[in-house]
Length: 152
Image (cartoon, rainbow, N blue to C red; front, side):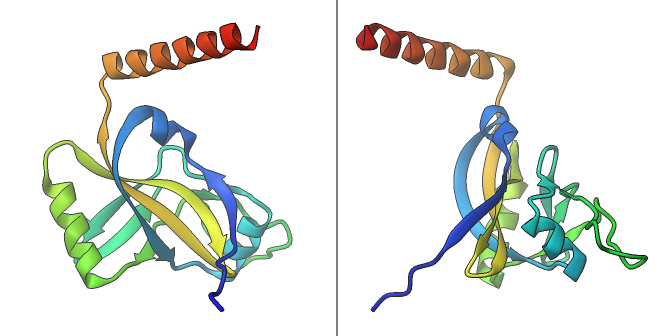
């Protein structure tokens, strides 16, 4: 019988969907300290303005805010510290190649628990221009208007 993987979202980076064209998604593990995991279990995280970089053959998550754990004492973690992401070498090479292309960046889309482990969904993304964002908003408004008309 196949094992079912249980996923529970911690936080989603909605701004990424608005600001970037998502080209490809992949899952990565993340190196955390104990108080960070406990804070994540309380859903105390934000991926707004966070990004990932490839440096010295390793992938690092930057600017991801995992708030302090309430019951943590003097050994609480730094909320904005850089965190190492766990990927296979082939995946890291692929990411490095993709990021070296002009306009591409690595953006975390969501943090979630999968079988008790914290995972990050990373995306290879290209930034949208202002007119692309306006076009998306116009399409969304047209779709809503059509749904309203069909409802009546």
